[in-house]
Length: 394
Image (cartoon, rainbow, N blue to C red; front, side, top):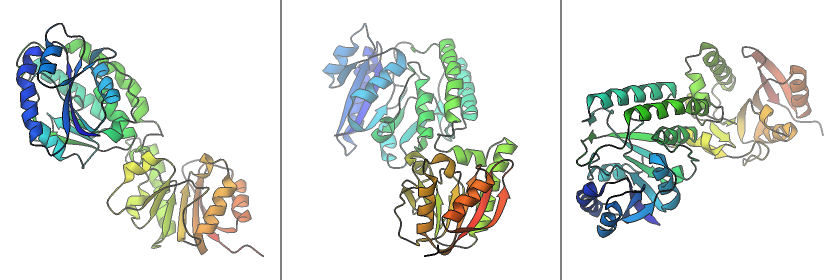
């Protein structure tokens, strides 16, 4: 497979391509990887296609409309380990391709950022104001760390973009990509760069249409960002501005930590993006949802992608197992409790968080060899029970 594909969405950019493509070629010669340049043509009426082919670029006809149509065409049609998108108007310096590529192993998406420290943008003041407002609003409403959400100068890892089902055909596709990447647990980093003025022609982005398209997308992206299925949902709840949501998450966390104490062999079953893994780094995190584990990855952290009904651990492997809000999510509660009993050592502790009726929980735990040691209420219907494993009678 090709290592690096440089992607240029184009509409009537022949004059810029004559100078830009040779400079991209020169930058790529300094990168020790197989590479190619792709022009995604959106129906140009000038010599864009002829110039691109003459200078060695592959030309793909854009499907769909607008900038989003060009990006989706590139993501679907180009087979490369990394795709780098950039503007064809000289506003993105070709040498900067090397800077982005050098950081390829640090995150799945690397943004050339105008607003990161040491970044800069030479734009008309009206565009600069609108860009600043839109980026600030989107960053705060969608709770994302990136400062330049609307930069189209980016390096993408194939494994990340292959899982994004993109819908927007406007420039809002740039925010859509980042929101869906965050929700899948992928990492996003920024590299500061200086945005330069267009050399030839005029921008195809119309400020009013640009802003309206972004605002229309904001509510839909907010709903997606705040879904429990989002990779970082539990972490965001832990730090939420909503005091009730934050208190509930932190109460579960505190009870779990108090129960496990100084135990070293701990399993956080169905861990999601729980902050318990950070407070008790000796614990193993296990979840069936791979994107939750992807978000929680750290060097040397132990994470396991497995089902609670068939855990890949030896008998008696753990001193304690945390199972917060797991029983509601499984079809076979008995199978989960059997696995917990098997994987706990004798006298091991099981910490169960559930909204099931207390009598039901007590009965289920007793049937699988657990004695109830205590219980806590978590701001409402949820209970957290601490139970000790006992040997079942022969």
